[in-house]
Length: 411
Ligand SMILES: Cc1cc2nc3c(=O)[nH]c(=O)nc-3n(C[C@H](O)[C@H](O)[C@H](O)COP(=O)(O)OP(=O)(O)OC[C@H]3O[C@@H](n4cnc5c(N)ncnc54)[C@H](O)[C@@H]3O)c2cc1C
Image 1 (cartoon, rainbow, N blue to C red):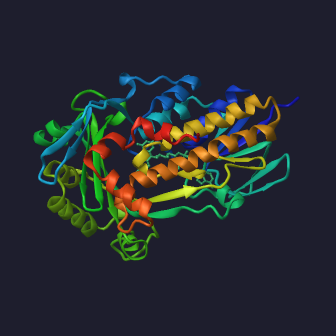
Image 2 (image 1 turned 90 degrees about the horizontal axis):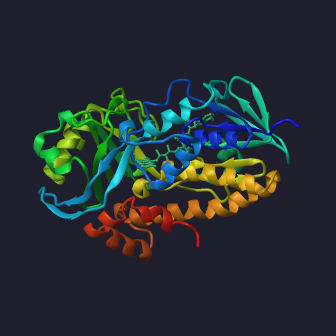
Image 3 (image 1 turned 180 degrees about the vertical axis):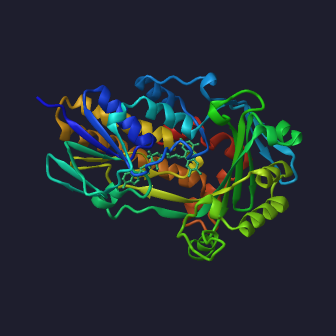
């Protein structure tokens, strides 16, 4: 009997987790990634969780300090004047997005990875899914996995009603070398995850591995994420308009961000942020702009199609679960198929029943954690959540904390 074949759309972390786990259970797997260039330059630092390391170990990838992780000793909350108001001894492990991506990609047989292949549509019946690519090539599989991110073509084809909803704020992100940090900034911030809240804005910052996974003192890097309310129709489009007056929609390649936009960002940092954090914004060579969205899919399986990772759900970054959720989605899918003992439809139904409520509750939890960033909370519950979650002690305890993912599990 020939092996079952899975077509995985999207060769980022979610697609690679699914590909490895399916291959380990005997599937023939092909991964199709739209980008023809290496994805390793994407992303910045990430928080990690034990669940992520467990899935990596199952695939045969072990991470330790020598391989690009950085330990965080505690969490700190800073007042606008620069005083540390609270410190919580909550150690954690930070890594970098490409530190997770690269070993996953390198461990895949090259013949299973097809870069530069963009899915344009799918057709399906009860047993076969057909994928059509932009070069008019066609592939068939018993299962198609949509791991194609927030603006998923697969989700759009199967669940057009599930659309990302703008959260009302953006994240400005920046990375700088440890060696470039002034000593007073380094002493206060490095080895900690630090926060400040100014009005409806939050900045958090933390260490991450250096280039080439270097974790030696002086070779590491540091990054910040600054959440700021931005009106969708007017302000965001202006931020995404380049120096030639070309509007790039609701995102913009970092080098095209206008110099005056960056200058304004830095000027605001100087007047509203603690001086240590303003210095980060001042010194980060190329800040990136990222609109924040919520995405909830009503189902994560549709016939022989499964959605995983950001294609299925996007929770705001406050729960810091994106990569771990992509890994857990892939694991749930493969374990559900295994438990169904060859009955593909039964396995997919079991996966949907388990993982859809999980994704939905993560999104809801992230909305609560970020409610104080919305300038006009939509409900009384959101207003109460905003008051609770903007308290320094609650920010330190709850932000991306281990509880986020466990509390989100359906009862
Ligand atoms: C501000 C911010 C902070 C974050 N912090 C953290 C954190 O601390 N911890 C954490 O775990 N996560 C974090 N994340 C989230 C994390 O980066 C994502 O959740 C994760 O990358 C999702 O992986 P994915 O494979 O599902 O999707 P993606 O990484 O988006 O990959 C989708 C892939 O599909 C490809 N693709 C798209 N369309 C097509 C097509 N038609 N055909 C073929 N290929 C296609 C794309 O090129 C892309 O490579 C953060 C995110 C943000 C915005």
